Length: 321
Ligand SMILES: [Zn+2]
Image (cartoon, rainbow, N blue to C red):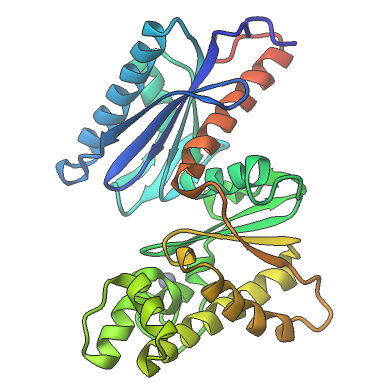
């Protein structure tokens, strides 16, 4: 079934973020044989970012060669709107891309077959295969950071919908709420992202704070402004999760990213507000992500191995003409 999978086989996994890229060589058991980090030269424009991704893939391929490893394929995950089906980066405000045939461009530049994916969907898939949602078939993965992004795994498969699925951060939870970068008002991420929690605390109290983590510390000490902001965030998350539970009925909601580092403090506040909103729906368990900031890179590796297997089943080497 796996014709050229000796012990030396690996895939390249690369998670491209707005400031940096995390790369790894992953063997069949998903063990990292090497890891490398690279800078994303976002300020230099989309072409420079594309060049640097190709350079990163070549460096990882060279590293594999030095270690006597055979690279079967590369998995690359990027932010924005990504269509896995057409292997195109449809849109990224962060990296300046519009409708870029990214897998094809990278294949031409580095001579490796490339599978393209979305960073958060890949992270959610990794949590479903290797992390907090292992063995669970219906999962909502929510990454809370500067913004809020989501990924759905339905019946064991990441839901893409042409790259548009999972934008839970832009569910409107307060129609008259704060303006969102997307043009709407009162999106979930204007109330509950790590950046929003810190900014709202400062706007309300006039006090600077060390991010959402700082707000959490003040909350524990009984600070009333921290409590008010925290409760707004928990309420907004509960409203959004209830909508997701009603429409999609995930068994499990996995929360990752910076704000979730505040751990049970956040999850218990959301949990107590979520359950009363679900009188008849399947009630999802709410847990913390396990893979931390390696989830996207592991997801890229899983995508690559999945494509290798699909190619092997079809009797062709993936990437061959
Ligand atoms: Zn929005």
